[in-house]
Length: 325
Image 1 (cartoon, rainbow, N blue to C red):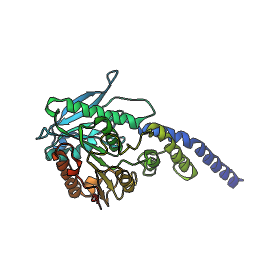
Image 2: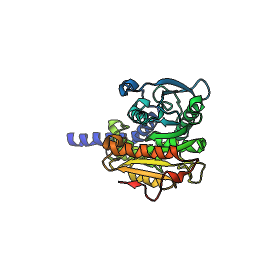
Image 3: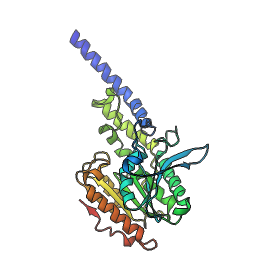
């Protein structure tokens, strides 16, 4: 009898886990775009950077985005630097240090619901909303008198790579180049379960294995059609800016969150896209996997993009010779 009773309890637990899986996925999908604020943050001075803390107006009801403006030796080049999902601007400080050493001015900023920026308690359309945050930050920095005529570069990582690429349409022709690291992909909801599989967004223990995990992953993907949105993604190659703006897409050969093949598939849509794949790099770890090659590629790309005459993308990249492995 005890064996039958034990089997019955396991069966009930499995059934309960299956029933709970969609709800657990819904909670996780909401948490992904409303993450807890990090308690320990890196500071610019730890990276030898002096910044001005800026507050960027972001629409109605006093909403603001928080930023750090790190002025470089040159005032003719500004890089707008994003961050990954659940992170904040402090996690992009290693990149800011490298760019600053090369003379660039850098504006790091927090997306809504991240870092010190405003709270948006909604559930849907964050792909579009993060794109709007990018537009807001870009218009802010280019409104400053010293950077009114500067070359502007959008530089995003994972989450913000989607936002940077999306924002190009509204910001064209102000943007001179786009750099995307560890993203984006053609179908964001389809790759979103990778966040669960890699433990970046943990599910409750009851739905971490077996059929419950499969149901949770599928539910999570479906919910992300709402949280991310996607009817207007990916941007059409013929849309303003996408046919003429130089782009650099960086992927990691060991990235299980946004696989390099997915990034390359998206990059092939755009005629002036250059790509770099670092074979040993995991998600968001390209700079650490091969720092010399990573920086050489990025800085050379930016030098050519920012130095090109007028709006001539041909001076930057030959799209037939851009994949590096």
